[in-house]
Amino acid sequence: MSLITTLARLEAVESGRAQPAATVLHRHLAERPLVFVPLTTSGEAGAPLGALVGTDRDAPRLLVVPQPRDRDLRFAFLAELADVVLPYLDAYADVVEAAERSETDPETGKRVKVEVELCADAPQLIVPGRAGIDFVRLLGRSTRFRRTAEQDPEAPHPAPPRVPLFGRWLTHFGERARVPGSALLLALTDVLSRHWATGQSSLEDQHLGALLAWLDPPEGEPGAEAAVRAELQRDARGQLVCPPAGPATDPAFDNQLLAPAIERYDRARTALAAAEDGIEADDRLGELTAAEREIRGLVESVTRPTWDAVWRGIDLLRTLPEGAHAADRWTRDRWSFTGHRDRVVAGEPPQPRRDDAVTAANKLATREREQARLEAQEALDDPLVMAGRRLAGEAFAGEVTEVVMAYGEGKRPSPRPLVTVRTDDRPHLGERARVYRSLGGKPQAAEFVGYDDEGAAVVLRIVDKMGRGKEPEAGSVPEKGDLVCFTLFEHEQRGGAKLPDPEETPWTHGGPPGESDAPPLPDPVTEEDVL
Figure 1 (tube, one colour):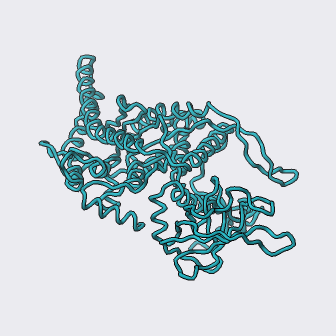
Figure 2 (tube, rainbow, N blue to C red):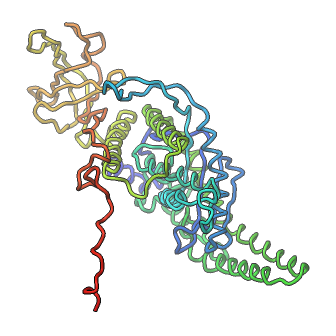
Figure 3 (cartoon, rainbow, N blue to C red):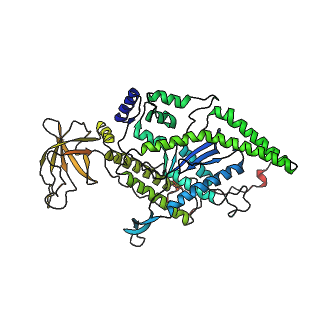
């Protein structure tokens, strides 16, 4: 936690209201996101109880599993959920635009530009909290390997054809959510707590109702009191007024309302199966329908407040202007979405249960690189974030007091002007340390030379982005009186070393190539082995 965030939390405690931790929106927010509010059965993480899903805040789609232990009802729920999500994804997969991408020519081995299709936009899924992302990942893992009747006619409980495809998409969204800065799948509590600092802990910020109580408390009520009320207040029946933001349920709801309703549903279904004539069957069917309607009402009563809270949080995020680099990160999300669409169309198998060594290393390197890129871009987009980096000694800002033209040594001397910057910051500069500033959206590097005689100004040597002539291009060198900001961190991250192909890994990582992965067969049993 940066010093700026700590100060913002202290101010939130004193004022009773959340304080800004950012001045711009650092995540892309789609015009038409798909909101998904799941609910699971207590004690069974993989057994869904119901969900609210849709793109219209006034008309969500309610999906319910009346008996979560019934496998057929769970599969029907997944099929119905797939019928909502897949058309939403397909609407973005069909609209494409031309784009260029660098690829390696198999004949020459050189990088060349090729024209490919890129989806003009990408879908966006929003869940209430971090646990919702875990549930999406769990659903993907449990459905993408399901066998359909066409694939295996003898498979027990075959899945509808769209369910495995649905699982592959959920897995992709869940994996993409692990990439820092990605916006394909967002947990609203994480996005809100990134842009506002409350007076409670990060764990308490995962309760959407309590978080919104700090961001937008009722008139005249401090955020701390409103948050406690959102967490603990109960109605006359002993139920929470603001239920948890899913997928977990409240024990009081489970014991007092849900369990009796499911028991009535089970009795009605048993009675319907035992009905002997048509009149009795009609009566039992009516009881079963009433019991199912009761469960639907209970599920809607605990998911609708969260549904409304999610859209309320989205409205708060829309009040912030989008950061300059958020569009670039969204473009990478579009490439990711397009790539998975192409893999599905090509008939490639589902994602494996476990990544091989090379794939896992590539994913880890990508996430580390994107984390560093995200931190740098957020600081460049947001003065408030940059202030935190300046307080940490990772950047400094000030006024240019002197510019002295100098040239490098060599056969063709290049301009290396010396720039003196007076600053009140205390950057952690070492001998010949590199610093960077943004020049026309590109990083310009400078080298730390030393401090002036008074020790209040930093002397830098500009080393690039000045053109190829003997004299620097206009605007490439700061002038006296300019206000500049230099960072000690790089603005663009470099790629790592190229990893070998999976089939060329050594024996310590799944090789050696050409040998079977199957273990050797045991020695045959002989008469001497049996007593």
